[in-house]
Amino acid sequence: MTSAGQRWAWRIATLTLALAAIVALVSGPYRQYFASTVAGSRADDRPEPCLPGEARPLLDSPHISQAQAQSVRYNSDPPTSGPHFAFVVAPGIYSDEIADGLAVHALEHGHVVIQYSPDTPPDTVDGLRVVAQRYAADVILAPRAHLRGIALTAWGRIDLLPTYDEARVVAFVNALRGRYNHGWAHASRC
Amino acid sequence: MATSTDDLTAAAARLIVARDDGECVVGRPDRGIYVDVPAAGAAFVEALQAGATLHEATARASEIAGEPVDGEDFVAALTDAGLLDPAGATGPDGPAAPVRGRPIRWIEGVSPRAAQLMFGRTAWLCYGAAALLAAGLLIAYPSVRPTFEHLFFLDDPILSILVYLPVSLVLSATHEAWHWLAGRAIGVPATFRVSHRGIFLVFETDLTQIVAVPRRRRYGPFFAGMAFDVCVLATALLLRVLYQHSVITLPPALYRLLGAVALGQFVAIIWQWFAVFLRSDVYAALANALRCQNLYRVTWLTVKDRLWPLTTAQQEELAGAAPRDRVVARWFGLVYMAGVGGMCWTFLTFAVPSMISTGTWLAGNLSTHSAASAAFWEAVAVAVCLAVFWGGPAVSAWRERRLRRAGAPR
Image 1 (cartoon, rainbow over the protein chains, first blue to last red):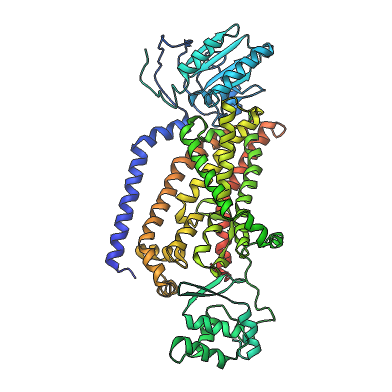
Image 2 (image 1 turned 90 degrees about the horizontal axis):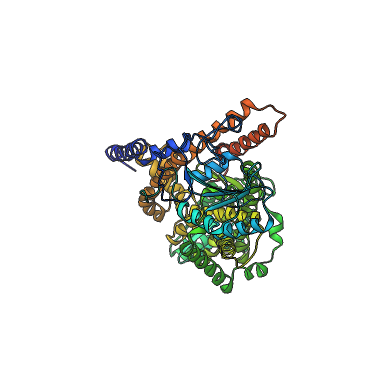
């Protein structure tokens, strides 16, 4: 059995480690992670004109409910940042429209969202599917009501295509996938 | 305490005797009680099982021990340990043991010969190949590495959870079925139950009767669940890689579901290795390799003794534990404490933020939408899922505590 002196030594050591963990939690990277998980990420705008598409100012991006989503106004259509759901959507090909609250969260994870008008010709959709399958870990492909043409979006960035241009789509995906993940993932590329 | 020869023979028939490299264990499977005994004690019980009188069994034990032994005293010790019933206290089958799980009758119908096909040398080579394939795919193809977002594989996150829930239950149950089958392959019956590990709700298979087989034969049942997991993981990853490279065509929803399955199996396998302090499958294999009898309990008592005084009963329990368990528990206690710390860290860094953000979503939907809307009922469904996921372990802990107080074996 443990003596009283040994027991106090064990208690002090355990308490010290527990306190160290708590200090790490409240002062280390976890603090930012916690804030971004609970309240959404924050980052400075990074226009970077050398990249494909156009930059859009970053909006505050808190987590919201479906009820709150009905009153959200984004600064682009489709949105490139802003309030979103706590849930996300996995990369892949979808046959139904993706809610903005999910799509924006996917953008926040560094994914590229490709959306197309419901009246897009089937061969164009097939072409987009081939690209989405090639970049299956990075791209979400879905139709979007009231959209004309094809919209490519990444965090803080958008490119609207009146017609399908595979090279432009691929360039957008290659340049912008993984650029942001609750914060800028790399130094400026321009 | 049983006294007549017939009584003793009938009582001893409920016991099993296991020997392995000089270690002897006498157990009562219906109560889940297993006790280390000297070789003479094992011989004594075997003699009773063979129909010997108390005098004859004592003579046999004395012969093995090389000195006179007190047979009546040993019978009293077995009774005190719960292996034999006190005289007059029992019906023909002894007192009912507290129910710890629900036996699965149909598994008894699987013959050991059929089960052995799944756990022969060829089968284990296949399981090993699946493990290598899964590891290779995860290393070579970062695009298929599981992330938590793969759980949300449908355009409706709530539907994703509700659809994946039964899938994960089937996979968990099959993991346990593989333990059953592997136990069956070496002639060990098993019991299935729902339980908890710390803050996590789990299925588990009670393989306590495995002490009746030599230690080297126990690894199959211990690793069988992970063998199944790794096969599913390798299959899901391979299909996703082939799809990404346009080698095969899959419905997009199936491709995404495979991502959720890969995530679930990956987490399940990682859990088994990192939850060694919570009686995971790897713990069972480790305790077996370290030749321990009840490492988890002795470790818990050792850790408590280091931080807080034990009760008199706990002091006696620790003092009476197998010497090997006490030696291993000295360092395994550190693993246990590190594991508990890691579990708390996981709770604070993953569970708390998730619960806050999900709680915000729930509160917004429940307070704004009417009960006639789909959004309201989606929020209710999420609340129920969260209650089961986080409340289940608490309920399970309470239930097991209640059973322990009622006298159920640990």
